[in-house]
Image (cartoon, rainbow, N blue to C red; front, side):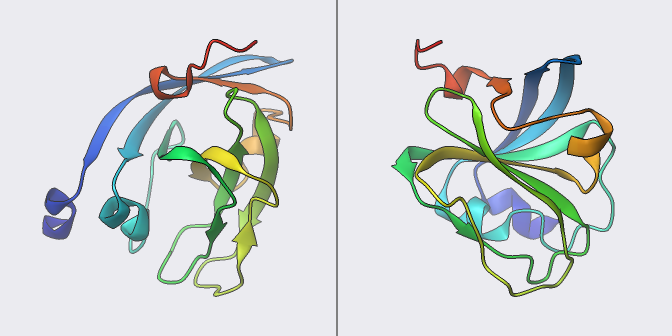
Length: 137
């Protein structure tokens, strides 16, 4: 926990708009390289309505892994327009298998494993957050 204080991590709100409704999450923002490398590693629990949002300065192909990550996670890869382009569901804790966005994305949202299924979050759904607003609909 003390190591986190060295990184640019803030918490605020994010909404996901789905066909089943709008869902509010409290997210930590991983905005610099150190925070993005640390991510949710070593965390033993996370409330159901929490997550971590990784935002990049420009769209790029993102490769992540679960090394040192205790929690199973859903990884939502998000395009520059705020729409989900891919979901990696229930990523396996401690796995060193690479999980790729498959195409350039602007952000990744990590949620507890199973959240996407529980809330019917799908590819094409939209994230509403100030750092993802591009003016495109």
